Image 1 (cartoon, helix red, strand yellow):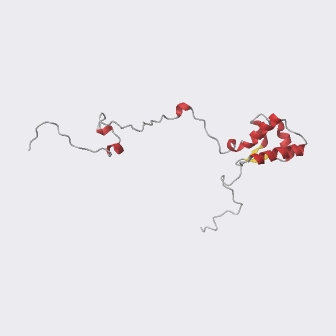
Image 2: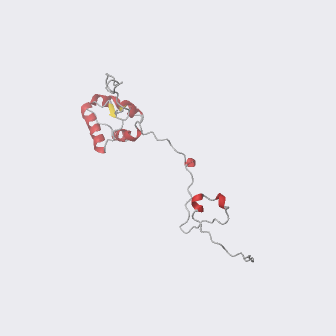
Image 3: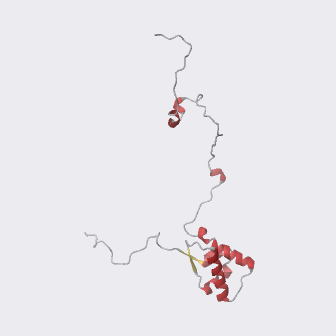
Length: 150
């Protein structure tokens, strides 16, 4: 079977990495309890947002301003702040950015010795010491004081 004959005639499907995931504005706003304002964004033409988009401060401000102009309304300042945060922060709350919460007790303790710390290996048997540490030993013979045979 040739390589050209093995291809299908239909359109090629995009891989999940190349496909742009979209997020509904309703879902985005309902996370913050602002689902009542979805109708304004829908009228302004902002039904969906790119899931992996990282909008700048100015882009979010432009979206809010455009929505206000097209709908003929002005958002109350504290609602505008909540809307701004919902749109600006949607990037790291969107698809692919799910990071599990780690409890403090799950983080292993780290031993950081003082700068002048010297490891005491004399009280530990040689077989119990890490092989990398064993290679650092300098073996010297010490006179025992016992008479030796020659």
